[in-house]
Length: 206
Image (cartoon, rainbow, N blue to C red; front, side, top):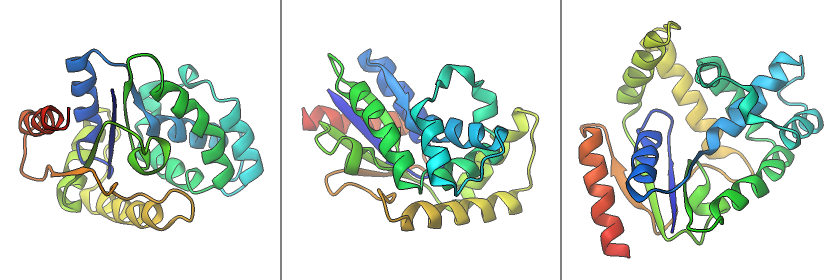
C-alpha cells in the first residue's frame, strides 16, 4: 500500500505521515528532507541556489544521513529547499530515489508537495493537508522556539506566503492537490482527529 500525503508547510502532513506509517507498520519518507538537505549542502558549499547544474550534482550524490534533523528544520533550510525544489534537474535527480522508496515490498508512506500528482500518481490513498497561514505560522514559530531558533510570527507569516507562492507556481511539479485526494483542513483539528479522518478514508478506499 502506498500512501501519498501532500500539503503546505506546518499543516500537519508530516505528523499524519509518521502516525500512519507507525499504524500500518510501513516505512516513511519525508521527501521535503531531501530538498532541505540539498539546499543546505549547496549553501554550506557556497553554491548559489539558482545554479541548477551544481545543485543537481549535489542532489545526485546526496547522503541524507550526513545531516542532523535539527539542521534540516530551520527556517533557512526550508527557504533553501523551496528554491532548489524549483530546479527541474534537482527534481529529476531525486525522483528515482523517491520512486524506489515508494515501490519497495509492502509499500510506504511519503509526504511532500507532489507525491500524489507526480512521484506516485498510482498511490492507493492520497491526502491533501492544509491549514490557514496564520495557524501554520503559529505552529512553526512554536516548533522553532523549542529548537532554540525563535522567529517572529510576522516574519514567519511572510516567509510562508512567499514559499506557498513559489511552490505553487514553479514550472515543474507545482504543489497542488491530486484530483482524487481527500482534503483535510487541520486549522481547528487535533492530530488525533486528523488521524481518525485519515483512517476512516483509508478504510473506505481499501
